[in-house]
Amino acid sequence: MSEIVIKGEGLGKRYRIGERERYLALRDLLARAVTAPFRRNGQRRSIEEMWALRDVSFDVRQGEVVGLIGRNGAGKTTLLKILSRITRPTTGYAEIHGRVGSLLEVGTGFHPELTGRENVYLSGAILGMRKTEIARKFDEILAFAGVERFIDTPLKHFSTGMQMRLAFAVAAHLEPEILLVDEVLAVGDIEFQKKCLGKMQDVSKSGRTIVFVSHQLNQIRRLCERVLWVDGGQIREAGPANQIVGAYESEMSSGAALVSRNGKQKAARAQFTRWSIQGSPMEQSFILGTTGPVKIGFEVVLTAPLRLGLHGIALYNSDRNLVWGTEVNNLELPSGTHSFVHNLPSLPLRPGPYTWRVSLLDEHGLLDDWQCVPEMLVATEPVTHSNDEWAGVLNIPETFSVLSQSDGGNEFA
Image (cartoon, rainbow, N blue to C red; front, side, top):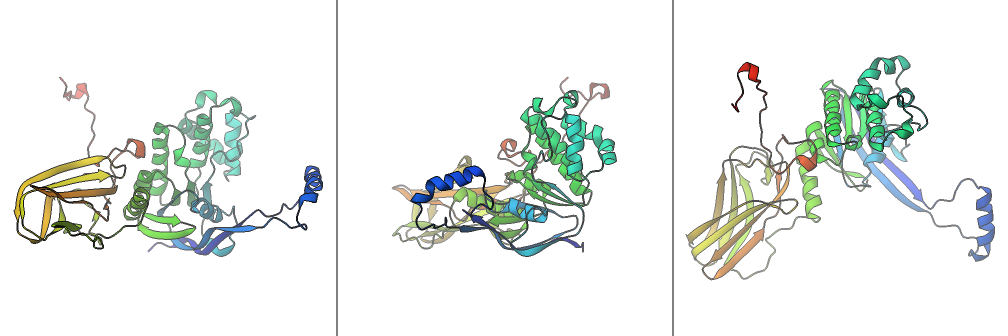
């Protein structure tokens, strides 16, 4: 088993909001003189404390790629700053074994009056690279950023996107044993984002340890083996990437806790009570972990016989877009409990949360209409575009090849 290279134990970070400033300028003294008559007995402004992190403990082993996910303000960046030794924890401690490289703020050390070439050397030095190392990698950095034509132009004439590309290219060519990354793969256009992700994958394959923060959940799925879900300054869940990301997406899409159908009080002739993925090897029966054949079962209780029944089923994604739907007609069933089982050859869906909706009608009208809970979490390996905007809904494996006419392989002839 690989050794532990990052160990956090009881980490906490407290900030004080409204704390009195520690030094005074002339304008501060003048302002105090003007406002002094309106103060109440010289009372100071109250100080409010906020815990950005509280009692966070975790381990990261050598060669692991661990993702951090969570809402804005959950404490992810604070945790990375503690690991980077930028911020001192209020409580607890962190042990790190190995040279650390941090990509927390792209553009660290850049100066607008210096040329792109000069900024590469300046930023590289600040990030811990030696001059000889920068010189050796300079052409590679330049090719990666794609700004060769402008490298001897002052940085202030670069567009924001060009500056970000150059900054990431410098930071990405560090060779630390542990790499801490915070949202830097969001820089640039889609083509450059893909290049950034490829570079991160190369780093991970080299056996180096990565802790990665991103709101692009497809990137987390592709790059990370394990995920820590940070919520309210604490680690809410930790585990395999697909499972934890799916649970996070489910909560983000629903905005509320899951509820049970059993508490519904209704004098009905028919009622759906539960659903499951039948024969699922996963621990929870609502997690889909295969792209092969699948059986989806819905339990319905009939208090009276059903004649000329119509059963509808629909599947929605987290954006409430209809993905698939069908119906079954002319059902004749006695009273009692029944299972409606749908056999599907495959459900090649992009990983994430989905909602089933089932209904039952008879010749007189609607008997029951249920938006099923819990949601279905698709936890298959993603094979779609790494950027969420272009990933689509389906998760269909494919193979790619190039056939040249000189090889006699022109299929369009």
